[in-house]
Length: 287
Image (cartoon, rainbow, N blue to C red):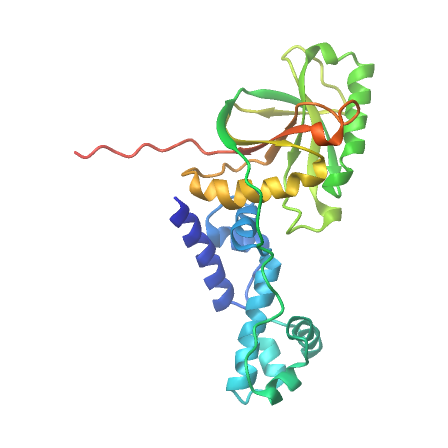
């Protein structure tokens, strides 16, 4: 299965190479990868060490650098072929990537690797288990903005749960996360903060009800402050998922909070990061 994920990432990179002026949006590249848009970019970033935007920029600049040295085309023509709207925007990107203007690079006459380097480095390893979680009935509030600011929405949920005496019906606090912060601007990140409730608990406005079916999840239990969750996500999506033999389902990532910062030291916080998985398909027996 690792090879399958590698093939998808290579297919996306090939597509970017072949279509520098085409639609290279996250949704378009998710279609090329044949993967849910909820998850594919985390896999891409985890496996390559680059965001899709960094990969697009690196590939476009490499193509442009080759043409600057190997052809007589004008800088404006090369900029257009590389997918830049104007020579000015191309020159700015080229200077950021190569440390010099396109004209100076051409006059120098050689190819130097861009300064855009994947941020691979060493990554911590985390244990991951496949768990079947029961169906859940959620009472949530929406949040749009940086994920690290979702705490204030959780506080609103806690206040509503307390005022409505929902705690006797609650089975846990959790969050749903729909976007990859490596790919989506912080101000546009979408999430829901809430708690799971029993079937008889009333859910009234402003709380919204979301039903999650029982399914299998890849579950990583992270211990430590929420600021460290990014490394756990990188391992879960970049290392574990490609080697797991499983496909992510078209549902958002779920975080389950086993304790709370209100009464727990940051180093002792426990968070379950849960990636929903498609059901396994059984191979047909030979006739």
